[in-house]
Image (cartoon, rainbow over all chains, first blue to last red; front, side):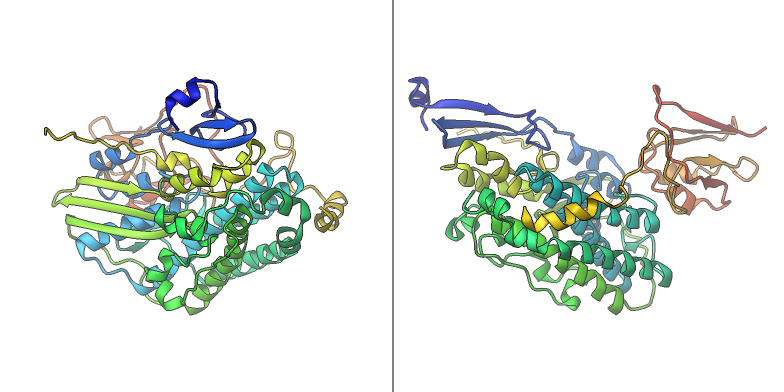
Length: 375
Length: 110
């Protein structure tokens, strides 16, 4: 879209955000529209930059776990876990097998509450208020379970480099099994709503199409790419105990916002199954192997967040401070596909399509310094 | 919508899931991480808690024999409780109340 075309009043430019009732977090989108049809979208980030990567360089590397957990308010556990994994790789620390299972349980619990939060927000975006209330009430069971077992509703803070700080004993395992069976029962009731409700289908089916051929080309990750029929999930690499538990990603072929919703709904049950299996198969033993080395060298760690692939790069110099800690969150990868999804749709579909990638803008904001080489 | 109708009717005749907050306060759960207190009869001012605190909310003055604790900086991760050799730090289940100022709490040896 050239500037001359818009300046000749051929098309209208609608600024959307950074503050808008639809958006959970500030992002600015410029919609170039022809009557009601979206012709082009220009995303603009940079409203909630917090300087966490710089903070990671100034902090002691052991304290960074708690800072990294604050990158995202929803999937915090997985951030801390991935950072610990990266440091464990640099320092050659072996994580005990029981700690690996515990990490799977807590990260799946995080995914569960994140997906339930999203299903509620999505129902709210399409105007289905009663479903929104219902799903958020069911999510409360998981948050109370977190508080009952770990003391906090969201931030578990059980990671340390070399394993876990806490353990799950028999009585806690029983609490997990009992409460999660309640969640399973309540979500089973909503199956007919998510799969068959005509109002929900009318609002999302065929909206925000991301073709299978374009999805991997644009680098989509997580439920966004799995909703387009591509089997891509970092959990397939078998990090932590996923390899031992056996994992098969959920894929829907619809390529639209509706199939992305179904992927997330089905993943709720997959997470419940994984937690049940991990609680049953968890071996006895220690949960922490204390590391004695300081990070010297570089390492990367990848893991699957509720929104897609999370990437950490750390560079240590043998002291207690890191040279560099690079974080790449899934929403950064899902913004180019979002632009493609929006083009060709109408203005009333914007909330549905934006919510369908589950945007987490605060996690995405990173500062990139591009140095222009003297030519 | 018809799929949801059964649930909506069930919710209509059941108890509300929420509590009327200022009038009715939910009981804190036994493991809830709440406000910290230092027992100065036990504390040997070794500064272990200050060293492990991720948000630097604790400051120990060994010469003046006092502990300065900032509840508004605290993450309530309880690393200090785990690392205290004298078990001088205890917690309550009551969540810290909101305030107009970022107050600082002082614990001194008498």
